[in-house]
Length: 241
Image 1: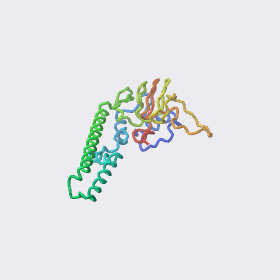
Image 2: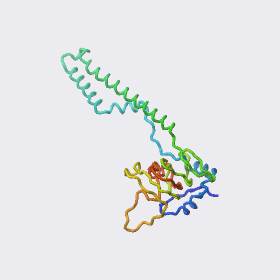
Image 3: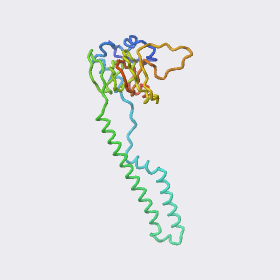
Image 4: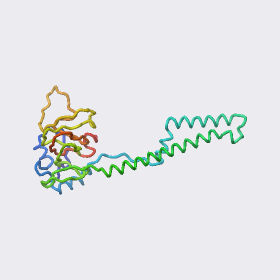
């Protein structure tokens, strides 16, 4: 048996029936993937995660603080004070440079405190993110099991209920009064009703950004329940692109 979706690029899954996707992704609408299929797909495609930008170092944060508008103004004031003192009659007097020295000390201390606070805040958010790692319910070997969202693969049948966050891009195969908030994707504040129906787009109809038979990664289910087959994960999802 082929692995689910091996080397397959799914074009317009919203225009395919659930049965077509079941065959293309070598899955089962009633039993989902087997554990072996899921493990192989996870090795091939990688975890269902968005790429994170590299975390800035403390030195980088400190340098960024020095480019702030107020800091630049203070630095310019300190340099101007040095120029005035150096060109004045008391240029040999070390005390005439105390104003500039005081400004530079304030700039360095302020930048250091701000950089340290931002660094610690980033650590706290990362720790909180790990503690609240999202999980989701899928069909594996014919049973509903809860797994980490990062372990979701193409071909998985995801079980959706009110309050769930959609873990990947799904083509709905079952939908009972499903409504989804797509604000994170489109900015639209109103909930969007979803259905399993295969809609044929007319030649004069505009392209739909979020087809009514698809739900997308990062969106939340606000009402109803349903199931969907995973079409894309990670950076291949709509929000990842």
